[in-house]
Length: 158
Image 1 (cartoon, rainbow, N blue to C red):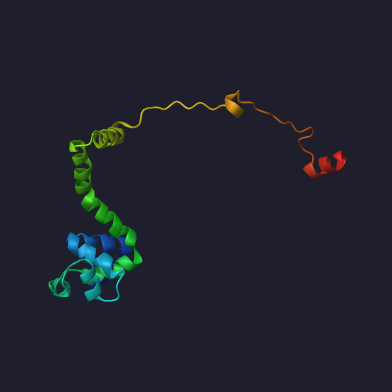
Image 2: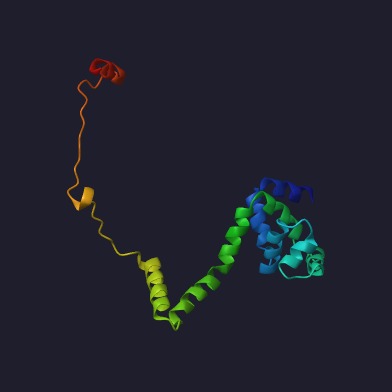
């Protein structure tokens, strides 16, 4: 038991949180996130539409809810990345469904976006002009004496 505790202490908070999140379902992760915003388990559970008794069952069934809640307080970015990873396929399915939209504009926009993700945007020419579309004028200023102090030149000009 003592060796297990020592090994756990050697892992970073992020590693411990990733490990705990790997053992949670999507609803359990939603609860962990909600628990950061509410003072009680009951309020957090209600906010995501589950019964407080469900959380009790998770906790007593060996689900590392409490570990995840405490670790998330220290590193919420890991939870966000885990949620993103788990929902990427769902998000892509929604995006691709736009290709079947009844609106031509939506289909075109989605098609363009997917193509650009895969192939990159086409090169776009940029033209830089001067005032009122005229030639661009560069002005080069040379110092008379590069080693001189600028304050000395200001005094001499005055």
